[in-house]
Length: 247
Image (cartoon, rainbow, N blue to C red; front, side, top):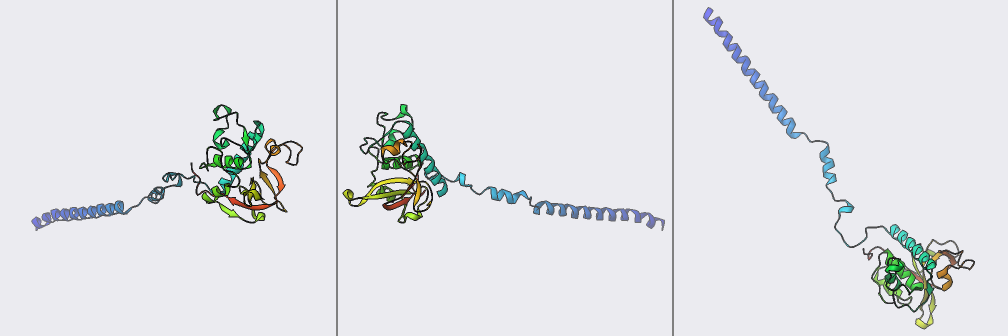
C-alpha cells in the first residue's frame, strides 16, 4: 500500500505537465491565427493611394484645364496684348509682313524678330491672344486674316454661335459682312462679358488706330480696353475649346 501511495505522485505530475503543454499549444495556435487574420486599418488607405492622380497621368500634349480656366486665360492675355500695343506705339495696319504673335512672342523689344514692325489689326490681335493662350498653329508670315479666320476656328473645333444675345466672355465675334469678300465678316474681336442688355458687351478690339491707342476721351472708353459697345451687324461667333490646345 505504501508503494502504491508513493507511485501515484509521479502520475499526477505527469498528467499536470501534459495538460499544461496542451493548453500552451492551444494558446500559441490562437495567437498565430490572430496574427494571420489581422488587417491594419492603413491597408485600405494604401489601396486608394496607389490609384493614379490627375497630375501623374501620361503627357498627352494637351493642357489639363477646364473651359472656365481657358476663358480666364483668353481674357488675361487679351488685356496683356492690348496694354502692350498701346504702351509700345503700335499702329493699326492690315499690311503686316510678320505675324505679331511670332514677332513679339515674348513681348520684349530685344527679342522681337523685327522690332521696327509695330503693326497690328483686328484679326492679328485675336490671333496673337490665342497664340499666347496655346493655339500656336498659325502662319508665321502674315497670320490669319479676318475673312479666313473662320476656317481656323473650324479647324480648332470651336463651337459656332449664331445668336448675338447668347455670347459669352472669350467668344471670338465676327461682324460687318464684307461684300468684297463674298459677304464674309470684315471685322472681329474678343467678347469680354455677358450680355449687358440690348446686345451691349465689353470687347477687346484692335480694329482701328483709335482702338489700338485707346485714345482718351473718344467713344472707345477712357484710355484702356476692354471697350463697352453695342454689337451691330453680327455675323456669328466661335467659342474656343480646350480640345486642340497644345503646350
